Length: 351
Image (cartoon, rainbow, N blue to C red):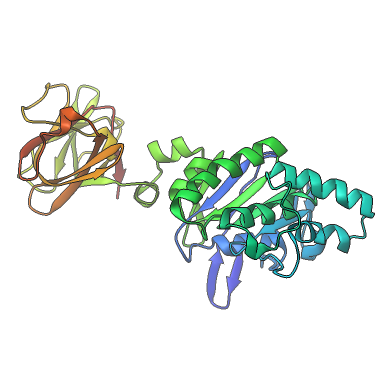
């Protein structure tokens, strides 16, 4: 637990990171992510609880004596030092012999594909190259844990996507244990072995990216990890192994949901569906699918995908996402359609 005055920034957080794992802490601004990172780095101490690295308590251990290295969002490179000197800085402070420094810096620069640029200053490098220098500086000390603070935030979108792949490759090649703090959902999903979604000082759900995306524990996690098409309503009676679900808007037809039979009838709930779970048709589809009528309001071409914003009832706008192709080109704004999905898709969240 960590408090800042009367505000509890980190509230009863407990998690374990496996050796060689890329673990991301994902959440909005003010969630408590940075406080967790600062405690791991040694810049702050928890007000309650303990923090173990390789089984050893880090309480009271100063940052320079912890087996961790922090890669800052701004890279924090020394502008007057060359690439080689920046990477070698920590080794020199530890009085490592010069021949060993040369060898270890060469190994680190080879890993991040910067060999041959040792004599350049940071200002002579691209943003992606500066990020790799900062990573090499962390790697050269062979830490037990590499801490990453929004490591790609300063890069443009294309370079950011390239560096996501490159950073993950370096982490796997070196067998690094990485803890990354980010508010960027796609970045966390791309690089992480597991993700902890954090909000209001607590970790709400921890698991592999696919598990969190497909089976979020609550509406906040569902919304934060992607688009959540939502329909509030009430759970009705049993129909075989399934339940009826009556949307709050009585103009909408009742639906079937694959919820457990033990749920109490009449309970308020929200049905959530991902855009890629929805399909569109001009004619009412098979009775085995769940169906809502709607009208296309906007068509947004996004390269490999096309997004369709469909008006459901009077005040609800759902997003359907489909692979761009000639067979979908005839769907146009203003056209009435049926949105449909499989009974196994979607999830109910209870109030």
